[in-house]
Image 1 (cartoon, protein in one colour):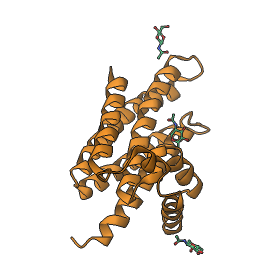
Image 2 (cartoon, protein in one colour):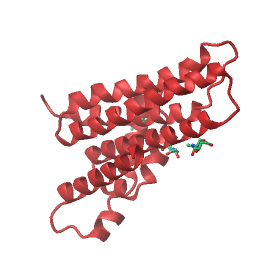
Image 3 (spheres, helix red, strand yellow):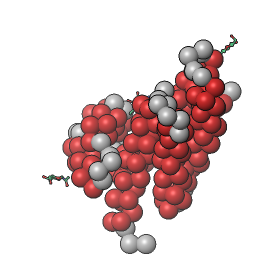
Amino acid sequence: MLHSSFFSQSCYLIFFFLITIAPLGTSCSTILSGISNDIIDQTCEKCANQSIILSYSLCSTSLQAIPVSHATNLQGLALIALELALQNATDTLSRIQVLLNSTDFDNFALACLKDCFQLYTDAAWTIAHSLGAFLSENYEITKTWTSGVMETAATCQEGFGEKKGGVSPLTKENYNLFQLCGIALCIIHMFTLAVPS
Ligand SMILES: *[C@@H]1O[C@H](CO)[C@@H](O)[C@H](O)[C@H]1NC(C)=O
Ligand SMILES: *[C@@H]1O[C@H](CO)[C@@H](O)[C@H](O)[C@H]1NC(C)=O
Ligand SMILES: *[C@@H]1O[C@H](CO)[C@@H](O)[C@H](O)[C@H]1NC(C)=O
């Protein structure tokens, strides 16, 4: 099934990442008690400072909720943001399926929900492939695809507004996906700018 394969793929990627970048000889407890939240706070503050659309609080609460990100570098934080975005997108696909089944929506809203289902299906695939590109250090491709996903979230949201008085039942989901991809993008910018290309 679509969702479980995304989840196992993303677990695999986290695992791959951990065994690849964890310095040799670092014990698990060192990794988990790690470097403190300073890097998260500083990074989120910088991103929120640089962009009026990015939320500091969403950034720091999202990244801090994942124990792995307490002990990582900028690359690790960007990867966590992409992982969270993938999970968000697949969770939203399930939610849209539930909404499509409900009797709460008129035909216009149902048509928008169907569009969003297609948009989120594409978004989930794009994020999964962005993760692959990221792990291959193809950061330019990762950035292009990740900003495409931000547009996708905006497109889903705008669909509902095309009818007067239309209210999106996916406002929170679109916002979260937009923010998580924006955070990933901001962090990738930070460490790719530091490296001459
Ligand atoms: C963010 O902006 C505030 C206010 O301008 C400044 O005090 C702070 O040092 C900035 N933080 C970072 C990490 O750049
Ligand atoms: C999506 O991401 C946001 C921000 O990290 C989080 O608060 C929310 O619980 C996530 N939602 C789902 C459905 O995974
Ligand atoms: C939608 O409704 C059908 C028929 O009642 C049911 O079989 C299906 O499991 C429901 N799907 C979801 C995602 O709730």
